[in-house]
Structure formats: C-alpha cells, structure tokens
Length: 318
Ligand code: 8YV
Image (cartoon, rainbow, N blue to C red):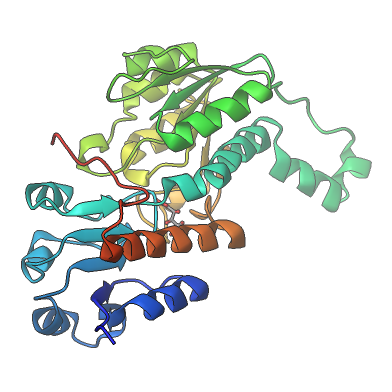
C-alpha cells in the first residue's frame, strides 16, 4: 500500500470533508497542537499541502517552516489573513471557495438591503410589543424596486448580487479594481458610483490593498438618504468615518455583516439606530458550509492526484 501524503490542517472542516481528507491524507493537526510553532518546525518540512480558512493567519515565517509547500486550500472566499505576496513569490497555489458560497452571500446582501429599507427589525418589534394597536400604523418606508445599486467588487459574489438585484427591479452599476467585460456599467470613480447610488454594497476582497477603500468621501457621496451594505470585510470601510457620517446624518444608514473588530465590534457603531447588524454569517448555512468544506477537500484530493485544481485563485501580478 502506498503511503498517504501529509496534509497540514490549520482549521477543522465539516465532518464529511474531514473524513474525505482522512481517506486520502495523513492529517497533521496543527489546529490541535499545544505548541503550534514547535509543531510546524517538526512537521512543516516535507509537507506539500495545507488546508485552512482565510481567517487563520499564514505568515511568511510559517511558510519558511514549510519549504516544500505547493498548495494552500482555503475553505473561505477571503484570504486576507495570508501573506499573499509570499505565496505568489514562492509559486504556491491557492484555492478558495467563492463558487460554493456566492448564493448565500448574495442572498444576505439582498436580505440586508430589503430589511434595512423596510425597517424589518423595528417593524417586527412594532407588532410583538403591541405598539401597533397602541400607537397605530408603522411609518412608511422606502421602495426598493426602481432604485440604483452600486456594487464595489465584481467577482463571483458581486455578479450574483447583481443578478438578484435586477430581479428585484433595481438598476446595477459597479466598481472593480480591474476592468471586466460584464453586462452592467462599470464606473471607474468610486465616489461617482456612490453619488449615483441609492445603496452601495461592498463585496471586494479584504487585505491591505482595499483597506479604507470606502472612505469618508465615498460615504458622504452616498449621502443622507443612502444605504451602505458591507458583506466584504470590516477593513474595507474607514470605520471611524462610518460612525461619524452615520451619527451626524451625512450617511443615511448601514447594514453590516462584517466589522473591523470581530466578534466584538465597536458598540458606537452597532448601537446606532440607523445600523442593521448581522454577525458575519453570510455563508452560515448547513448546505453552504458543507459545500465550502467539500470544495476545499476536493482541491486537496485533486492536487495530490496531479489533477487540475478546481477553484484556483489568480495571485498575480502583485
Ligand atoms: C467566513 C467569509 O469564512 O468566505 C469568507 O471569506 O468571510 C465567510 O464565509 C465564514 O463566515 C466563517 O467565518
């Protein structure tokens, strides 16, 4: 019997995916090690693949301890905790799971737009508390059909949001770091896109390249009637500016799945009456988490079989 290849496990996946990996590989459980540095020193050399999530840091120093590494299989869309430059320099392949979670994240973006625009949470409380009978009808809200949606970041998930928004009768335009050939108008100036939009959804990759991309100027351009929705990363918005503009009325409202400081976001932000909060749970369904883990495992199995990777990420040019 041939020996199974070693796989460094930096986060545990859903049970079915773990079982599949165990069938194909000898699992090196870094995630369960007491002294992780020592574990990497002992088991890193010779290890050719890692399975992890984009939330677990993967530094240059950790890569130094795995000189034979050729694959990082990431069980999330984002990989902003990785040193992507170091991966690219060393020619280490990276795979992610955008294609497994785009439906749920796009659904969440739409849910946040609709819930914020129709005041779902206060409306629910209006019924539950008896205020409906006591105080009368709930105030009128704003119509979504016929409005303009700006999407910041037009990858797999951005495009899924766009198709849903169209089905809801919205007009879509987008901003992207690189030009794309898509059926929606691309606006190269982010401030202009915000100015033209009723709602602005951020779904751009996190990391240093996009830190503070949604700046005070962008939020001001979105304006006192505008809604900012973040299903990307907390870092892509200047959070101090977000709090300031929401507080003094330069920005109308925000609906957020992500925050700079998770899982204990700034309460000056989460406590505002014009903010709708969700706990970084856009991909949080059984089906999608199973699919993400399954895809991460499939990439590992393909790699060790010498087959093409299923969902590689293009890391260059950097
Ligand atoms: C998280 C995500 O991985 O894929 C991403 O980049 O942010 C999410 O799917 C998930 O919420 C676990 O924290």
